[in-house]
Amino acid sequence: MNHASALLSVEHLVVEYRSGRLRGPKRVIDDVSLTIGAGETLGLVGESGSGKTTIGRAILGLAPVTSGRVVLDGTDISRLGRRERRDRAQGVQAIFQDPYSSLNPSMSIAEILVEPIREGTQAEKRRRVHELLDAVRLPSDAGRRQAREFSGGQRQRIAIARALALHPRLIVCDEPTSALDMSTQTRVLELLREIQQRTAVSYLFISHDLGVVRAMSDRTAVLLGGRVVEEGTADQVAGDPRHPYSKRLQMATPVADPVLQAQRRQERQALLREQAAAGVA
Ligand SMILES: Nc1ncnc2c1ncn2[C@@H]1O[C@H](COP(=O)(O)OP(=O)(O)OP(=O)(O)O)[C@@H](O)[C@H]1O
Image (tube, rainbow, N blue to C red):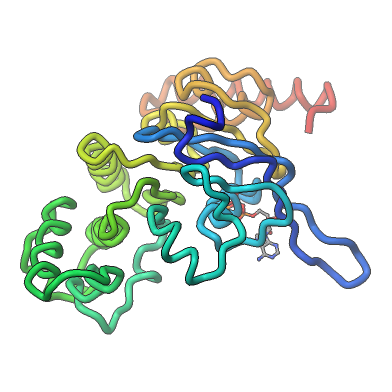
């Protein structure tokens, strides 16, 4: 996909943080370019510290953009002030790994869902809360309760409902199921897919788990040390990775079959020995 036809394009993004006074700034994102089309999911995979969250935060206006651009529908949103961003970039929303920390414990679920909605009568807002709860398969009486009364999976559904409140074009999903057990994870991922089929929302799907990224994404970008080292279709990157680092991620992906898992472990150790001998980082 070229930049012109993308819903969102990240162009030559550089993010630097100030480190100690004597040392120069620390570059955590180094010339990253990505595109996401309408209704498409781009997976972003890499180990802890590779910069996945920082890219998501730069798209959301929460990380400092040192240079480069974040273009949504033809407009550079990377340097908007808070107010301008609210008006021009409300089509970009987020869900994070730990929904509980972002759900205000003193508010009811209905209050949380209605908070970002600025227009409409009370009756219209109530109707919208019911629609949102229905969209994430929560009962309508959930609106009267508080976040602490819900399980981790249900809280993530509430966070998804809140992200949907303003009819977003793109949702940054930052490790949305990493804190959930396997069966809850599967149900939340199914819900995200179902919502995408219904609304044609785009996702930037961030995870350290190549298997989850493959299941969710159309294309995958692999991040290492703040740089994209490989990008391709989700099946190619997970099934036939080209870069040695992507191969290591592939080997580290958990598989259900214990025999295959043991075989993978041996292959991974052999690959690591081979790469260490060849001096690959
Ligand atoms: N506010 C900050 N100030 C300074 N350094 C930061 C800041 N935020 C992130 N970093 C650094 O940027 C690098 C990338 O962090 P980031 O959280 O984006 O990685 P990640 O791939 O999302 O990792 P994880 O999966 O552990 O969240 C790390 O070295 C981190 O220490």
